[in-house]
Length: 262
Image (cartoon, rainbow, N blue to C red; front, side):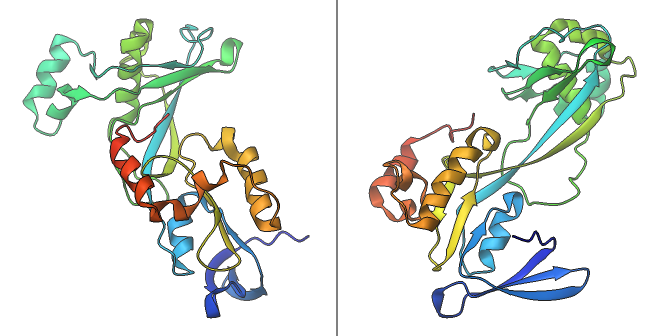
């Protein structure tokens, strides 16, 4: 087995089956003969599927996270905490008045959605806490590096402070945050795609949204069974791309209202 690092720039699927994968490395292109191709490209999955003429019913959401130092130990003993109610961010009267004066900041006084969550990180004097607050819901284009989201660290800290009021001690204290993140790639109902594609020899494993770490081992085993033509578990059909061709399944989609987001 050989690990080849490069960018997939094309796939020859002449006659409806995978034949060659074209890979570019430092401006040099290699053509690799292939009988099987697994598309597991995370946020680039939709683009990769288009190389073989397949349009996947997936979307991407930008999810950022921010890490704060926690010298007070405010979150040190906490479990994962998730806030499930809409909220208004905690501003002082003076802050509220200043934000209201500027049209570009008035939105910060509005209602923010549920979903802010956080957990502790590290121990002792090096402890910190991580906050995730995807307050801008909805699909977006996949762009790297991630575009900066104005005021994200401030919004995340204040949103978390609604649930853990002691965190208000860090507001306005010059705490240096570290913002990171990526994309949640998901289907409409937030159920992954695992299995063969309409092109012979092509398979997909993706659209795991926020639970890829938990599902990856079982998904890998399921995909291996598809490729090896081994016996499949009875739930395998629930993850096939072909499920969208069944009228009964499409009618179920219309009755699933929350998108299945964890």
